Image (cartoon, rainbow, N blue to C red; front, side):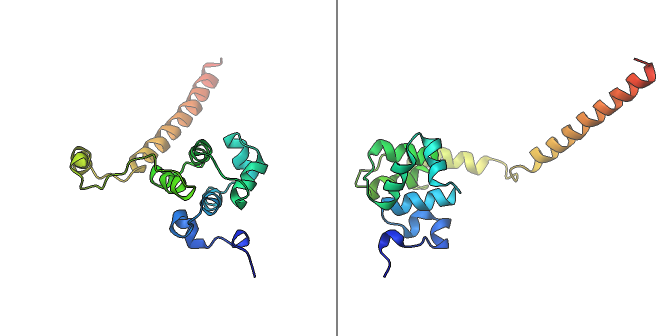
Length: 151
């Protein structure tokens, strides 16, 4: 029989790591795998030893609040999920979350409703392609001009 430490992470847990993972070690491992980082890669990026990351994932070490925030920042975990990490490790949540229909969210929701619905990246990618192609054609035509002028 496998122990909870040896349990594999299911594919559905990777799509929303906090959906099935309930303990801090499971959350950490799921998010690390979602970001496609090894324990060593996470350790190097967050300034922690690889051994400590291993101990945190296996449950041999308990994380401090600062360590949780440091690792979640490195893994670019959304604030709502960082609260899940803190609660799973036995700490109080730090980040406030409001429902979208909250009165204090009315200005934000109004701005979202007024904004044009342009697919992000559509116009930017066309601009980037045209500016890249115009730059390359300018370089080419500049070389041709210099060759014709004899310089």
